[in-house]
Each structure stands twice: as structure tokens, then as C-alpha cells.
Length: 231
Image 1 (tube, rainbow, N blue to C red):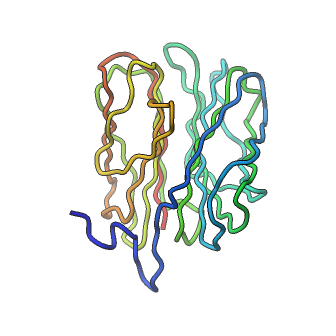
Image 2 (image 1 turned 135 degrees about the vertical axis):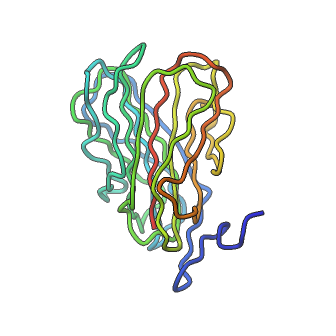
């Protein structure tokens, strides 16, 4: 059973972290070095609202990444970035950014890549309240082609409360959806069973706190992700 402070994230001074129940995703195909998505729903304005943006890109370069993310004109803070690892089919990069965005409800999200992306660029976002800062306490990212039924990933988590661990994971192949992630609550995206955001409010202090991603089939696919902790 979850304790009350795990559900709401209460900490010193009455501050608490909670998932705002708002998430979304979008993508663009083609060659772009930057792109702006408009009319992205980020929920109710609040001084302590944090918007987390997971960016995934596909290109033919050996290494590339994300240079910048802005949400409603607010510059995001990079939590972790895994750039352009070779896979069995193509190269993929992914990055996780956070931005404190007090104003706006339907806003623009802009991504600037380190080069022109030849194939596609995707974003996934989720909204949380109660964060003191967009700066991550720690971060970790991964990516390569693997034949797996499960993969354990971890991030160092702080002792202070409230705190949040938030991650994103993606794999190629429509026949191999993600089934569960231990120790975390998944955020789902309609029509996309291969990408999940996941989180744990007030995770135990650990170096690292581990999360196990479980897939449907033990087959070779590109498997990428990012995870970071905040307080």
C-alpha cells in the first residue's frame, strides 16, 4: 500500500508533487533542424507547474542530439541526453527536458536539434505540479538494439522530500509493446504502445533506484530511454 506522502508527495513546508493528469505527443517526418508544435495542452497554469518533454529523433548520423527545448517560450533544462546510438536499423537519439511554465494552457513546444534530422522527430510531454526547480538531481539514459524481455534501468534519487523520478522509454517494432514497469506508474499515449513515460513520487533514496521495463516478446529491437530525478 502506498503511504499518503507517496501519493501526493508532501514534503517540508507543505509543498507536494502531483501528476497533473495532462500529457500529449506529436511527431513530424522529414528533414528538420528545428520544429515548433503549436496548441499543446499543458493544463492549468500554476507557479509550480513543470512540463517534462521527451524528445526522440531518427537520423542517419553517427551522433546527434538535442540543443534546446522551449515550452511557451520558457527554456527547458536538459536532464539527460543520449545522442544517436547505432541500432540494427537506423540511429536514434532521445533526450529528457524539464521547464517551469507558470502561464498558458495551449502552448507551443519547440525543439532545436544539433543538426538537420533526416527521418523524424517526436515529442512526448507530461505535466506535474509542486516542483521547486526544473534542474535534475541526477539523470541517466540508454539506447541500443537488444534482444530482451526486460531491462532494468536506474537513477540516483535524493533524500529530501518531496521528490520525483521520471523516465521515458521507447522501443521499435509494433509487435513488442511495453507491458509494465516495476516501481513506477506509466503514462500511456493513445495508439502508441511502444512509448511510455513513467514516474514515482517520493522514491526511496537510492544509488540507484531501479525500474524494470517489461516487453511482450523476446526479440531484437532498438530500446531507448531516459530517466531523471528531481526535488
